[in-house]
Image (cartoon, rainbow, N blue to C red; front, side, top):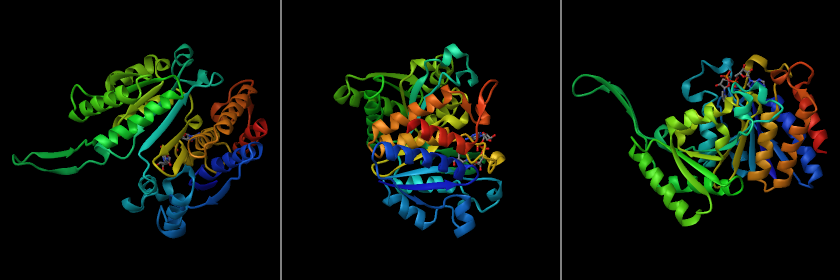
Length: 356
Ligand code: NAD
């Protein structure tokens, strides 16, 4: 199985190497042959080639079974020309791989739930998956830049646009995911105001009644969903939503886990999938060996599950992470009294050893 590794910038190389150590342990235990191809992306690619998403990286990613990304960006590249910024590489790779579905699982480990800004009893049962449409909607609709209208008033607009196939394929993904989880989909929209949401809601219900009647489907307006995520995150299983609502809700939901360093994500299409932690390149701690690699390690587990068809190895990594936390090992972002502080690479080694 071919994996393109894109360490990127800042803490990216450190956390990706920790994840590779865990993947190697999983490969040995489950008799898998994993081949890695390390390529440049983001600022590191700008420095070496003048472009954040060079052709060699595109080719490697397209030919791979899966891509594991660290993070891109940093102050060094803040003043490069806007079309060549490191973050442009993220849009580039989503496009090159046709990644239309973003998955963000949010599960609060009982060993770190006290770090959540929500009370322990509220987050104790939280285990949800946000399924976000990634290539449609207002971010990709027509953007009419600010200009004077016929009355001489400055006006700008952005168009939210979805087609039936776009809604069907993402809704299908959510229903399939729910079948493997607790069997519940909450579709989030703004159908009381938006025509695109009313179509989204109707098509989702049609698909549900036709093919997924065994899954529980309910609808929530996005404003109510934002409240419910804070009031009672344990009520959710799979949240299905469009690009812009998913962008906002997934960031809101991510903070309830207690640390940005813990959460994985996946972006999927019909071919190669891409996996990355939800955080950025953390330039403030880059090179210090203190970054938390668990978000990347758990992204590698998602990669095994969704792209490499290795469910048992994925579950084993997730369990190994829980056991290492149970034993009291923590990177500094999670540290507290009575716990053992470890570095990025030590955390990788501990998870690999626990897995083995
Ligand atoms: P960030 O997520 O990089 O960092 C926010 C804070 O969280 C920092 O204090 C950082 O030290 C801490 N943090 C993040 N990950 C951590 C980890 N694994 N372990 C311990 N602490 C961690 O967000 P930012 O500071 O807003 O952005 C920094 C750079 O990353 C910017 O250039 C931004 O554009 C880029 N960025 C990239 C991605 C991506 O590659 N997908 C996502 C977001 C931001």
